[in-house]
Each structure stands twice: as structure tokens, then as C-alpha cells.
Image (cartoon, rainbow, N blue to C red; front, side):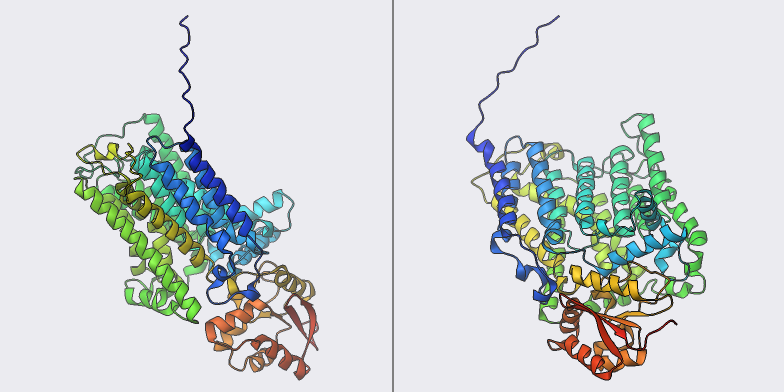
Length: 595
């Protein structure tokens, strides 16, 4: 038996501790500056105005730590992975850590949908279009029943951080499958982590299906693509050899892709069609080995839409296809129509446009840097541009360009990673893609400084953009308690009204049992709001500080407009206050009774 050779352990260099020290410093700064924030103290700029400069300093420090590690001759994967976990916490854990409860009305509403299925065993037909794709809600209903929990509201607050963390992991796996395990893949991961401002990672079917889509793309890029998506030469559709892996691995990949397709079809109306479109782009550019794979994803989605979602499209097919080809309508609803509100909100919207443009510029720079090295990037460019086709199909309630950006971001980040990689080292020649993983440190050059500035700017911009609506999209425990008290008091068939459905944690209970309308629908701009309420005569009315902020930011109402509304309703003698805590009030009709 051969004696085992022991390699001499080299002494640690003092610089080895620099990156861990910077990462620890970033975490300490973030914790030292963290404090609880309430919506009442926020304005149109949202959360950023309530954050400590000490906390904000954590993001440039962490960006510097990541770049300092990447310019080492041999970057340490464990250190980079630890920094990435810390980055997810600092970016996506900021709002859960600084706010009392979960944000966004729609996340509370989704728990109500799941609760209805758990209690009744089936979706509520004719109530909401999302019930026609009940996969996510059925899964949550099963989990809550299995755990003997009343509902899924305990999951809401930290759901964005968990979902975003899994998405970052998915992009990391995809980037490794496309670019390899070198530095460009890490940079792509960090661009995605620091530029995902869309807030689409809340408790929702689209967030769950987005994770499934990333898993499917990573699986395809790893096992079912030949040549690779970053391959710089020409490739014709249907002419390539099988991928360099075992037949068994390809069969398992096909089986998993089929499972993903079956999970996507009854869960979200958009994601499976987008995934099929991305696979089609891979097939048309000669990268996808099996050209029939797009149909493997598309057919289950079409079958479900035809049969499972029949209650949705029967009688309202015009609503489904009415926006087809109407790009101008999508632009009006998705861009022009969203620039409303006060100066603070307009600044946040402009910042989101700037962040999108920055990612686009990085992607363009990645394409150019690869082109200078003689490498083609047609598949990556087309995959980043393909989601823009959604704007020609559906306006998606004005959120179409937000969804386009979200779906394009993984591939735009991969190209952006190539751009930043070129700043740190400049490999050349036909084997440049392999050379990209070999690091030539340039501490004295401007490249690392520029890369750190870009990452820090993306991080600070993203936390500002994500918290831009927190004056009316974040809630207190008192807000939730006011709504819960209304659910407790209301009899079946009665009405619980709110001033704005977008600024109240409504919908997490009594779905289909009590009516839950918003005054804003019948009273645009809250002109003569007291008269609107008295005419509608709801049995209960919830008034919260977040609704106060909503009226001020969106419609320019003066401070204290909700107090004046409550005073007018009390003066009329038709309403009385039955709950008053922390600024949240519940008004009940004085003559309320059983309907």
C-alpha cells in the first residue's frame, strides 16, 4: 500500500482575511442600523427615507468584498457563497426585518384563496380568475391542513426572502451551466441578486412558477443543450450531436421537465407559455438537442387552458385575446399609465426605469465584449429579448413590462456577468470562454473599482425601488387586527369595505362569505368620499394609516383626509367606531343587522 503523501500547508496570507472581514463588517453595519419602520412615517419615496446611513453603508461594503474576492488568483467558492447568502438577507430581508407584518394586499388575498380551498375542498368558481389556475393555492391548502394550521399567514412576511434566495440559487445554477463555474458566473448571480426590483417574489403562484421555470432552464442548459448557450461558433437546428452525457441522464432530464410542465400548467396562466417560448428560441438557434421539447411544455398548458380554465374564458374570450398585437395599449398601461402620483412616487418609477436600463447596458456590454473576442452570443441575446414579446400578447393588467423584465433578467444578468468579467480581466483568443474563469488580478486598475461601484449602485437602487411603495403597501399589526375584527363581527352576506384594496391587508378570510369591495372603485379620487360611503352603506368600513398615505401619494389629498372622513361618518350618525388601535379604525353601521 502506497503511503499517503501529505501536502505542506502554506501559511495563511493576511489578505486572506480581508474579504471575510469586509463581509462581517457589512453584516454588523446592517444590524446596527436596522430599526422598525411604520407606514405612517413614510412618504412617496417609501422605505429609503427611514433607513439609517449606517445600514445603507453595508451594501457598498459587501459589494467591495465580493469584488475583492473575485479578483483573487483563486477565488474561494465558500467565501463567495457565504457573501451571496448574506447579500440575499441584506437585500430581501430588509423589509421583513424592519416592518411589523407582511406587505402587499395580494399576498394576504392569496392566503384567503388557499384557506377557502382548505375549508371547502374546491376553488370558488366565478369569484376570481386566479381560481382557474388553483395549483399553488391547492398545495398551500394541503400544507396548512396537514400542519393543522388555520391558514398560511405566518408564511407571508419572510416569503419574499426565501423565494428570492431560491431564485438566486436557480440563476447561479443556470449561470454555471452556461458560463462555467468561473468568475463570470458569480458576477451574473450578483447582478440578478442586486437588480431584481420587481417585487414579484411575494407569496403567489407566479413566484412559485418562476422558481420552477428557472429550475427547468438550468436543467435544459446542463443536460439537453449542445453546443452550449455560450458557444461562440455557428450551429444549425437539428444538426448537432447528442449532449456529452449519459442517455440515462438525458432521460431523467426529460422526465423532470415533463413534471415541471405538469406543475406549471394548472398553476399560472403565463409562465408555461414563456418557458415554451424560451425553449423554442434554443431550438431555432440550434442549441436545443431535442426540438420537440417546447411542445412538452406547451401541450399541458394548452390542455389546462382549454379544459381546466374553461370557466375563465367562456363568455369573455375577448378579454383574453383583446390585447393581442396591441403594443401601444401595453405601453400605455405598462409605462405611461403607471407614472401617476406625487413627486416621490414618480422618482421611484424613474429609478426603476434607470435600473432596467443599467441591466440592459450591462447585457449590451457583455455582448460587445464577447464579440470583440470573436464569440457569438446570438442565443443569449435572443433569450434575453424574447420575453419582450409578451407586450404584444397581453397588457397583463399594466404589469406586462415588469414581467418582461423579470423573465429576461436571468439571461441579461448572464450577459452582464460577461461585461463585468471583462472589466476585471481581458481574456482573448478562440479559447476565451475557458480563459474567462482564470483570474488575473488587477488591484491597481480601475476595473475592480468600477465593478464594485456598479454592484453597489444596483444594490442601493434596488432596495430603494423595492421599498418605494411601502407608505401604503406595508401594514402594521393594528391594521391586520382591524380587518380580523371585521371578519369576526360580520355575518354571512354582509359587506366589509375598505377605502383602497391596494392599501389594506384584506381578503385573508371569509372569501365568498362576506363582500369585500373597495370604495375607490365607485369613488375615483375619493371625491366626496363620505357621500360615496353613505350611498354604498357598507356594514363595516376599515380605515388605516396606509390608506391615508395612499390617498395623499396617488391623488394629492391633504394630510388628515381619512380623519375628516371618519368625522363626517360619525357626525352623520350612521356609523360608530368599534375598533381603534394604532391609527387603524373599524367603523360599523349603527343599524347593522342580519341581512
